[in-house]
Amino acid sequence: MYATNRPKHNTKFSFLLLFYLLFAVPLTLSYRTTKVINFAHANFITYGAYVAVFLNGLLGNKSLLLASLLAFLVSGTLAIVSYFFVFKPLEKRGASMSLIMISSMGLWIMYNYLLYMLADIAHFFSGVNFVSYGRILYSDVPEITIGSLRLSSGFIAVCATAVGMSLFFYIFLNKTSLGKAMRAVADNPVLAEISGIQRGKVITFTWLITGGVVGVGGAIWTSFSGTVTPTTGDAMILQVFTIAFIGGLVSLLRTGIGAFVIALIENVGISLLNAWFGVPTSFRTFLTFVALLVILIAFPPLGAAGGLPFRYRKKRGGAK
Image 1 (tube, rainbow, N blue to C red):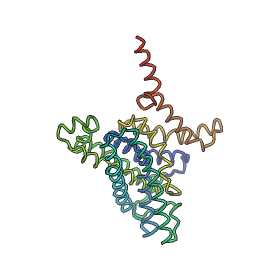
Image 2 (cartoon, rainbow, N blue to C red):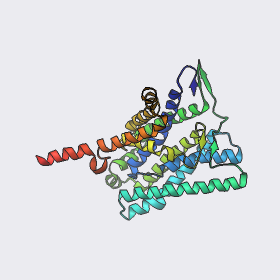
Image 3 (cartoon, helix red, strand yellow):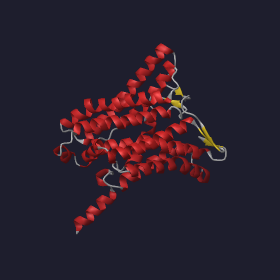
Image 4 (cartoon, rainbow, N blue to C red):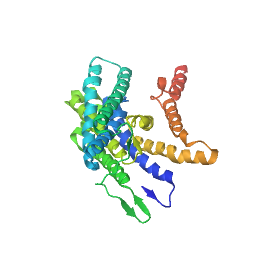
Protein backbone atom coordinates (compact mmCIF):
# COMPACT_ATOMS: atom_id res chain seq x y z
CA MET A 1 0.00 0.00 0.00
CA TYR A 2 1.30 3.44 -0.80
CA ALA A 3 0.14 6.91 -1.63
CA THR A 4 2.16 9.47 -3.53
CA ASN A 5 1.40 12.18 -0.97
CA ARG A 6 1.97 10.29 2.27
CA PRO A 7 5.18 9.50 4.18
CA LYS A 8 6.54 5.99 3.94
CA HIS A 9 6.37 5.26 7.69
CA ASN A 10 2.56 5.67 7.59
CA THR A 11 2.45 2.86 5.04
CA LYS A 12 4.52 0.55 7.20
CA PHE A 13 2.49 1.52 10.26
CA SER A 14 -0.72 0.34 8.58
CA PHE A 15 0.83 -2.96 7.55
CA LEU A 16 2.39 -3.74 10.93
CA LEU A 17 -0.74 -2.78 12.86
CA LEU A 18 -2.75 -5.36 10.92
CA PHE A 19 -0.07 -8.03 11.15
CA TYR A 20 0.34 -7.47 14.89
CA LEU A 21 -3.41 -7.95 15.28
CA LEU A 22 -3.20 -11.26 13.41
CA PHE A 23 -0.30 -12.48 15.52
CA ALA A 24 -1.13 -11.13 19.01
CA VAL A 25 -4.89 -11.67 19.33
CA PRO A 26 -4.58 -15.48 18.90
CA LEU A 27 -1.78 -15.49 21.51
CA THR A 28 -4.08 -13.77 24.01
CA LEU A 29 -6.92 -16.15 23.21
CA SER A 30 -4.71 -19.23 23.62
CA TYR A 31 -3.40 -18.03 26.98
CA ARG A 32 -6.90 -17.20 28.23
CA THR A 33 -8.00 -20.75 27.54
CA THR A 34 -4.88 -22.85 28.15
CA LYS A 35 -2.85 -20.66 30.56
CA VAL A 36 0.30 -21.50 28.58
CA ILE A 37 2.77 -18.72 27.78
CA ASN A 38 3.82 -20.27 24.50
CA PHE A 39 7.09 -19.12 22.94
CA ALA A 40 6.57 -21.61 20.11
CA HIS A 41 3.96 -19.10 18.93
CA ALA A 42 6.80 -17.65 16.83
CA ASN A 43 7.04 -20.95 14.96
CA PHE A 44 3.38 -20.78 13.95
CA ILE A 45 4.18 -17.52 12.13
CA THR A 46 7.28 -18.94 10.46
CA TYR A 47 5.75 -22.27 9.44
CA GLY A 48 2.77 -20.49 7.92
CA ALA A 49 5.16 -18.33 5.91
CA TYR A 50 7.18 -21.35 4.80
CA VAL A 51 4.12 -23.19 3.58
CA ALA A 52 3.73 -20.32 1.11
CA VAL A 53 7.48 -20.31 0.38
CA PHE A 54 7.67 -24.04 -0.36
CA LEU A 55 4.53 -23.92 -2.50
CA ASN A 56 5.98 -21.06 -4.52
CA GLY A 57 9.57 -22.28 -4.74
CA LEU A 58 8.81 -25.94 -5.47
CA LEU A 59 5.49 -25.80 -7.32
CA GLY A 60 5.37 -22.24 -8.62
CA ASN A 61 2.17 -21.50 -6.71
CA LYS A 62 0.95 -17.88 -6.89
CA SER A 63 -2.39 -18.36 -5.16
CA LEU A 64 -2.48 -16.69 -1.75
CA LEU A 65 -5.78 -18.41 -0.98
CA LEU A 66 -4.25 -21.87 -1.43
CA ALA A 67 -1.16 -20.89 0.56
CA SER A 68 -3.31 -19.50 3.39
CA LEU A 69 -5.53 -22.59 3.60
CA LEU A 70 -2.55 -24.94 3.77
CA ALA A 71 -0.77 -22.61 6.21
CA PHE A 72 -3.82 -22.77 8.50
CA LEU A 73 -3.74 -26.57 8.46
CA VAL A 74 0.02 -26.88 8.98
CA SER A 75 0.35 -24.28 11.77
CA GLY A 76 -2.87 -25.45 13.43
CA THR A 77 -1.64 -29.03 13.34
CA LEU A 78 1.73 -27.94 14.75
CA ALA A 79 -0.08 -26.26 17.64
CA ILE A 80 -2.16 -29.37 18.36
CA VAL A 81 0.92 -31.62 18.21
CA SER A 82 2.67 -29.33 20.71
CA TYR A 83 -0.32 -29.58 23.03
CA PHE A 84 -0.78 -33.36 22.88
CA PHE A 85 2.88 -34.37 23.07
CA VAL A 86 4.30 -31.68 25.35
CA PHE A 87 1.89 -29.39 27.17
CA LYS A 88 -0.83 -31.92 28.01
CA PRO A 89 1.54 -34.60 29.46
CA LEU A 90 3.27 -31.93 31.56
CA GLU A 91 -0.08 -30.66 32.79
CA LYS A 92 -1.16 -34.16 33.78
CA ARG A 93 2.04 -34.55 35.82
CA GLY A 94 1.25 -31.36 37.71
CA ALA A 95 4.01 -29.28 36.12
CA SER A 96 4.03 -25.60 37.02
CA MET A 97 3.24 -22.92 34.46
CA SER A 98 6.90 -21.86 34.60
CA LEU A 99 8.04 -25.36 33.59
CA ILE A 100 5.51 -25.49 30.77
CA MET A 101 6.70 -22.09 29.57
CA ILE A 102 10.31 -23.34 29.56
CA SER A 103 9.23 -26.40 27.59
CA SER A 104 7.66 -24.08 24.99
CA MET A 105 11.08 -22.44 24.64
CA GLY A 106 12.53 -25.88 23.91
CA LEU A 107 9.86 -26.44 21.26
CA TRP A 108 10.65 -23.04 19.80
CA ILE A 109 14.32 -23.98 19.32
CA MET A 110 13.53 -27.49 18.06
CA TYR A 111 11.01 -26.26 15.48
CA ASN A 112 13.55 -23.68 14.27
CA TYR A 113 16.20 -26.31 13.57
CA LEU A 114 13.62 -28.62 12.00
CA LEU A 115 12.69 -25.87 9.56
CA TYR A 116 16.34 -25.27 8.71
CA MET A 117 16.62 -28.99 7.93
CA LEU A 118 13.53 -28.88 5.70
CA ALA A 119 14.87 -25.81 3.91
CA ASP A 120 18.22 -27.52 3.28
CA ILE A 121 16.53 -30.69 1.98
CA ALA A 122 14.32 -28.62 -0.34
CA HIS A 123 17.40 -26.73 -1.53
CA PHE A 124 19.22 -30.00 -2.24
CA PHE A 125 16.46 -31.25 -4.55
CA SER A 126 15.48 -27.97 -6.20
CA GLY A 127 18.55 -25.74 -6.06
CA VAL A 128 16.43 -22.89 -4.66
CA ASN A 129 17.71 -20.95 -1.65
CA PHE A 130 14.93 -21.43 0.92
CA VAL A 131 16.96 -20.12 3.87
CA SER A 132 16.55 -16.60 2.49
CA TYR A 133 13.54 -16.34 0.21
CA GLY A 134 12.34 -13.17 -1.48
CA ARG A 135 8.92 -11.53 -1.48
CA ILE A 136 6.17 -13.47 -3.25
CA LEU A 137 3.83 -11.74 -5.70
CA TYR A 138 0.42 -13.43 -5.74
CA SER A 139 -1.94 -13.37 -8.70
CA ASP A 140 -5.30 -13.98 -7.02
CA VAL A 141 -5.46 -10.79 -4.89
CA PRO A 142 -6.00 -7.61 -6.93
CA GLU A 143 -4.64 -4.14 -6.35
CA ILE A 144 -7.19 -1.35 -5.84
CA THR A 145 -6.75 2.31 -6.71
CA ILE A 146 -8.84 4.93 -4.90
CA GLY A 147 -8.04 8.37 -6.26
CA SER A 148 -4.33 8.94 -5.69
CA LEU A 149 -4.14 6.06 -3.22
CA ARG A 150 -3.14 2.61 -4.50
CA LEU A 151 -3.70 -0.36 -2.22
CA SER A 152 -1.34 -3.23 -2.88
CA SER A 153 -2.54 -6.82 -3.00
CA GLY A 154 -0.60 -7.57 0.18
CA PHE A 155 -2.34 -4.80 2.09
CA ILE A 156 -5.77 -5.88 0.84
CA ALA A 157 -5.05 -9.46 1.90
CA VAL A 158 -3.88 -8.63 5.43
CA CYS A 159 -6.64 -6.04 5.89
CA ALA A 160 -9.36 -8.48 4.84
CA THR A 161 -7.89 -11.23 7.02
CA ALA A 162 -7.52 -9.00 10.09
CA VAL A 163 -11.07 -7.69 9.79
CA GLY A 164 -12.39 -11.19 9.11
CA MET A 165 -10.52 -12.59 12.11
CA SER A 166 -11.91 -9.87 14.39
CA LEU A 167 -15.48 -10.50 13.25
CA PHE A 168 -15.03 -14.25 13.48
CA PHE A 169 -13.71 -14.16 17.04
CA TYR A 170 -16.45 -11.75 18.15
CA ILE A 171 -19.27 -13.84 16.66
CA PHE A 172 -17.68 -17.15 17.64
CA LEU A 173 -17.00 -16.24 21.28
CA ASN A 174 -20.33 -14.50 21.86
CA LYS A 175 -22.85 -16.31 19.67
CA THR A 176 -21.82 -19.97 19.42
CA SER A 177 -22.03 -22.73 22.02
CA LEU A 178 -18.40 -23.75 21.44
CA GLY A 179 -17.25 -20.16 21.83
CA LYS A 180 -19.20 -19.79 25.07
CA ALA A 181 -17.67 -23.07 26.26
CA MET A 182 -14.22 -21.67 25.47
CA ARG A 183 -14.96 -18.58 27.54
CA ALA A 184 -16.23 -20.75 30.38
CA VAL A 185 -13.04 -22.83 30.36
CA ALA A 186 -10.98 -19.64 30.32
CA ASP A 187 -12.86 -18.15 33.29
CA ASN A 188 -13.16 -21.24 35.49
CA PRO A 189 -11.97 -24.59 34.07
CA VAL A 190 -13.08 -26.62 37.11
CA LEU A 191 -16.61 -25.22 37.10
CA ALA A 192 -16.77 -25.66 33.33
CA GLU A 193 -15.98 -29.39 33.64
CA ILE A 194 -18.54 -29.78 36.41
CA SER A 195 -21.08 -28.16 34.09
CA GLY A 196 -20.42 -30.86 31.48
CA ILE A 197 -18.08 -28.98 29.18
CA GLN A 198 -15.38 -31.23 27.71
CA ARG A 199 -12.34 -29.15 28.51
CA GLY A 200 -9.95 -31.29 26.45
CA LYS A 201 -11.91 -30.80 23.23
CA VAL A 202 -12.25 -27.07 23.86
CA ILE A 203 -8.51 -26.66 24.40
CA THR A 204 -7.70 -28.77 21.33
CA PHE A 205 -9.96 -26.59 19.20
CA THR A 206 -8.39 -23.47 20.72
CA TRP A 207 -4.90 -24.59 19.67
CA LEU A 208 -6.14 -25.39 16.17
CA ILE A 209 -7.81 -22.01 15.69
CA THR A 210 -5.08 -19.87 17.23
CA GLY A 211 -2.20 -21.70 15.55
CA GLY A 212 -4.05 -21.73 12.23
CA VAL A 213 -4.89 -18.02 12.22
CA VAL A 214 -1.28 -17.11 13.03
CA GLY A 215 -0.14 -19.40 10.20
CA VAL A 216 -2.41 -17.56 7.78
CA GLY A 217 -0.82 -14.31 8.92
CA GLY A 218 2.59 -15.83 8.24
CA ALA A 219 1.55 -16.80 4.71
CA ILE A 220 0.32 -13.27 4.01
CA TRP A 221 3.57 -11.88 5.46
CA THR A 222 5.41 -13.32 2.45
CA SER A 223 3.62 -10.79 0.23
CA PHE A 224 4.94 -7.91 2.36
CA SER A 225 8.34 -8.89 3.76
CA GLY A 226 11.41 -8.42 1.61
CA THR A 227 12.98 -11.68 2.82
CA VAL A 228 11.60 -14.76 4.58
CA THR A 229 13.96 -16.84 6.74
CA PRO A 230 13.49 -19.64 9.33
CA THR A 231 13.72 -16.93 12.01
CA THR A 232 11.00 -14.70 10.56
CA GLY A 233 8.65 -15.32 13.48
CA ASP A 234 11.47 -14.89 16.01
CA ALA A 235 12.05 -11.34 14.79
CA MET A 236 8.48 -10.42 15.76
CA ILE A 237 7.95 -12.39 18.96
CA LEU A 238 9.07 -9.52 21.23
CA GLN A 239 6.48 -7.20 19.71
CA VAL A 240 3.77 -9.85 19.78
CA PHE A 241 4.30 -10.63 23.48
CA THR A 242 4.48 -6.93 24.36
CA ILE A 243 1.14 -6.37 22.64
CA ALA A 244 -0.40 -9.35 24.43
CA PHE A 245 0.93 -8.11 27.78
CA ILE A 246 -0.69 -4.73 27.18
CA GLY A 247 -3.94 -6.68 27.01
CA GLY A 248 -3.01 -8.51 30.20
CA LEU A 249 -3.07 -11.76 28.18
CA VAL A 250 -6.84 -11.83 28.78
CA SER A 251 -8.50 -8.95 26.91
CA LEU A 252 -8.81 -9.19 23.14
CA LEU A 253 -9.88 -5.53 22.93
CA ARG A 254 -6.88 -4.28 24.91
CA THR A 255 -4.65 -6.53 22.81
CA GLY A 256 -5.96 -4.70 19.75
CA ILE A 257 -5.13 -1.39 21.45
CA GLY A 258 -1.66 -2.77 22.22
CA ALA A 259 -1.14 -3.56 18.54
CA PHE A 260 -1.90 0.05 17.70
CA VAL A 261 0.43 1.37 20.43
CA ILE A 262 3.43 -0.80 19.44
CA ALA A 263 2.98 -0.15 15.72
CA LEU A 264 2.84 3.57 16.52
CA ILE A 265 5.99 3.41 18.67
CA GLU A 266 7.93 1.42 16.11
CA ASN A 267 7.12 3.67 13.17
CA VAL A 268 5.85 7.14 13.98
CA GLY A 269 7.67 7.24 17.34
CA ILE A 270 11.07 6.25 16.01
CA SER A 271 10.64 8.60 13.04
CA LEU A 272 10.01 11.55 15.36
CA LEU A 273 12.95 10.62 17.61
CA ASN A 274 15.16 10.32 14.55
CA ALA A 275 14.08 13.71 13.21
CA TRP A 276 14.25 15.56 16.55
CA PHE A 277 17.16 13.92 18.37
CA GLY A 278 18.96 11.91 15.71
CA VAL A 279 18.08 8.55 17.31
CA PRO A 280 18.96 5.80 14.78
CA THR A 281 16.00 3.92 13.33
CA SER A 282 17.74 0.69 14.41
CA PHE A 283 16.58 1.58 17.95
CA ARG A 284 13.04 0.61 16.95
CA THR A 285 13.23 -2.76 18.73
CA PHE A 286 14.84 -1.10 21.75
CA LEU A 287 11.74 1.08 22.16
CA THR A 288 9.55 -2.02 22.12
CA PHE A 289 11.76 -3.63 24.77
CA VAL A 290 11.44 -0.53 26.96
CA ALA A 291 7.66 -0.67 26.56
CA LEU A 292 7.70 -4.34 27.60
CA LEU A 293 9.76 -3.63 30.73
CA VAL A 294 7.45 -0.78 31.74
CA ILE A 295 4.41 -3.03 31.38
CA LEU A 296 5.98 -5.90 33.32
CA ILE A 297 6.99 -3.63 36.19
CA ALA A 298 4.04 -1.27 36.38
CA PHE A 299 1.03 -3.48 35.79
CA PRO A 300 0.62 -6.52 38.09
CA PRO A 301 0.38 -9.45 38.04
CA LEU A 302 2.52 -9.56 34.91
CA GLY A 303 5.60 -8.08 36.57
CA ALA A 304 8.06 -10.11 38.64
CA ALA A 305 6.62 -10.72 42.14
CA GLY A 306 3.46 -8.89 41.19
CA GLY A 307 4.93 -5.62 39.93
CA LEU A 308 6.21 -2.65 41.88
CA PRO A 309 2.81 -0.96 42.49
CA PHE A 310 1.39 -4.24 43.77
CA ARG A 311 4.26 -4.71 46.24
CA TYR A 312 3.95 -1.09 47.39
CA ARG A 313 0.21 -1.40 48.03
CA LYS A 314 0.70 -4.74 49.76
CA LYS A 315 3.38 -3.26 52.01
CA ARG A 316 1.16 -0.32 52.94
CA GLY A 317 -1.74 -2.65 53.60
CA GLY A 318 0.43 -4.83 55.81
CA ALA A 319 1.65 -1.83 57.78
CA LYS A 320 -1.86 -0.89 58.69
